[in-house]
Length: 606
Image (tube, rainbow, N blue to C red; front, side, top):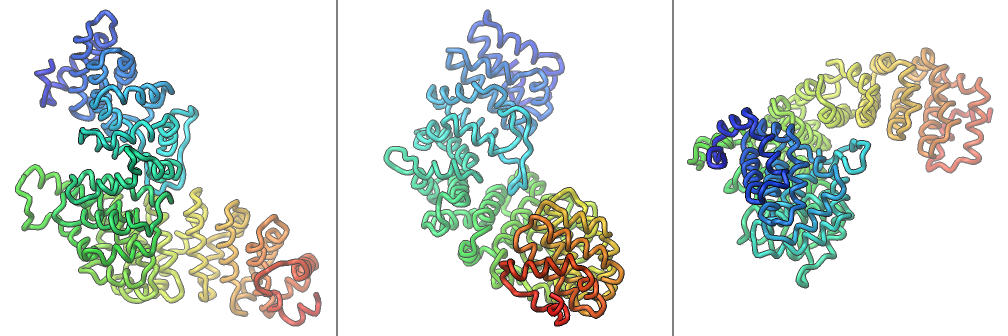
């Protein structure tokens, strides 16, 4: 059986259909079976697992993992290694749920104990850990939790479990193993353990092996004479530690070692997957640090180098291996996704960098094309890139208008998944600023209805973006637009937003009301139709338990109302509101004395 299935997926499928798996598992679990037979069973099962994803599903359906984990209790090392090899193959498959490793609390402890048995147990166990400790999404807004404490569906909980079982101490010494495979798997394990985890990262900084601190070991692994895989993974470890706050962003190991290494990985001499991983890791490293963004932008002509990501594979491609070319053609979209991500990070803060990015060959056309790609990941990355560049006042007035990016952006906002909607609606907020030429055509395309619907979303980020965009839209707008916004929101929804538990939603809603109630004729018109409801809303906020910023925004709204010719009467005839204003004038601790903007007759009344 073993010889028949090696390298033959059809034979593997035939054996599974014929019912070989239950029989093999039966023999593997029988105490009466010889150790040699049980080992051979594990080897054949491991070979079957190396076939298609359907093969792995069939093995999982037969409950192979509990049987293999039970096999690890055997005293025989060869059998243990065979079981671990099979487990490794199953767990690296994308169809295997990571949680299956954590169903029994004793499994992790036993795996830690087996690390010392041989270089094979070290290699396989580290590989299992690194594949069963992954975050579902970078920059996730929240994590799902399941009832059982060890059946967790997110990275941080897996990280905590492994950390609490001594993963750092047990794996650290493997970084200096004589086996390259062991060193690599230990390195990969640390790269996922440290990701977005300050506890692990702070611990790694202070761990030493043979008198050398781990960051120093990682830096040595970054050297050009080391295999590319090792350089990349070491850079990921240092990047995670830096982002977690364990290493300063201006530390020489980041500025002079990690960043240049990742830029090298973006070179067209590297393989597709290396270029993708290098660009995405670099994007994560520099995402929140202005100085690192500036350094990266002038390192090895990175901005121009990334333009090659959109030309791959070229007609003069150096790839001669047909299989490799076929693989790269299928995965070329990953290069475009990675390039958009890195451009987004590079242009997050610096105006000069944004200008260089936009001036790169056909950049705006590429972003516009990216917004309509079939791959959701490319579309998301393209929107992120557009959002980053939309922070530029100059580009909003020039390149964004020249390429009418609002059109594909509005199209993206139709029936998109939430992760795209969040970034796209953030971008729309920028395009609706007063000085943006895109504001008028966006209004004409029916944006008010879309944005009002976003304010009703269960997703907090979408509610914030929806009301924020409406606030920008209302700033110095015509009376008709303001009336359309109020009509689209409805009084009920306005009160709902003012009662929102999130202070950002509340502040943006108050900001919207301030912008709606500006210029005297507009104030009088709006208060004549919605005055009662708005005064109720103001009273609701002033009587509520809110912070000083919220109260200040609310009093600013009253100051605007007082500026109206007829609208001010709604304040003058409301003793409750007058007493509240008087109270805050005496007891308020506000940054601006906005209440002295109220009309003279209002001051006299007070």
